[in-house]
Length: 309
Image (cartoon, rainbow, N blue to C red):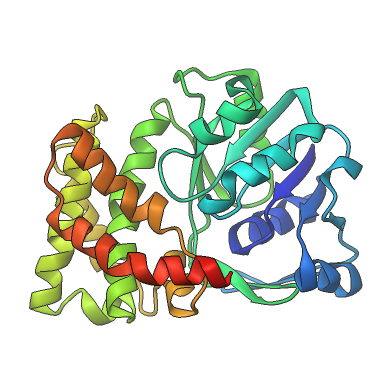
C-alpha cells in the first residue's frame, strides 16, 4: 500500500516505521528538527519489543508532493486536527481510506466533516510511545494494538485490506463491528488517567493505590462511563470495574501522553480528553464534578501553554 503518516509523533512514527519495515510505501509528514533528522539519519525506534532503524526515510512537510495515497494514518494531536485535515486534501483520492489513531472520541467526525465521511473508518490504538529526540521514537509498552471498523459496522473489502496491511507489519490488530463502543471503552480509561496523571504529575502505579487518590480515580472513571451511556453508547454494565482492573495491572512507569505534555509545558489535549466529558455531561444532564474540577484546574495552564506554543 501507498501510505502516509499524518503526524510523525510517537504513535505515527512507531506504526509508520513498522509498516515501512514490512514493505509498504510509507511517507511521513513531519516538520522542523524532527524532519531534518529523519532526512539526514533516518527514523530510529527504540522499543521494548525490538529496535527499528529506517534509513533512508521518505519524509516531507509538503503533502502536495506525495500524490494520491491508499491509506492515511491520522496521528496528530487532537488540537491540530482541523489544520492537518485541510493540509491533506490534495493527496486524498477517490478510494483513499483515512484511519484516525488519535485520543478522544470525535476524530472521525471532525476529519470527515472537512474531507468527506466516505473516506473515514473508525479506529483507536493502545500504545505508549513518544518522540525522545529529533528522529528518535521511544516505544515503552509491551502492547501495540489497533482496533478499526466501518462506522456502520459492516466488513468491507477496504477494511479487510487495511487490516491485512496492519497485521502484516507485526502489530496486534482487530476488526470491530461496533467501533464507537470500542472508542468509548478506551476513552473511559485514558480520559480518567489523563486527568489524574496531569494533576498528580506522578506515574499511574504511584497514585492508583493511595486511598484518597484512588477514590478520586474511581469517581473519574464512573463519570466518563456515565456520560458515554447518556450519549447513547451501549457500554457494558461492568465497564467501570473492568476499567479499574485494567488500570491495576498496568506496569510501572506509565504516563499518558496528555500528562507528558502537561509536565513539559506543551499544549495538551485537554479539550478532547477532559473538556469534552464536561460538555457532554452538561448536554446530557450528567453530573461530572471530578472531571469538571480537573478541567478548571488545568485550563489556566493550558491557555498559557497555547499562547507560548
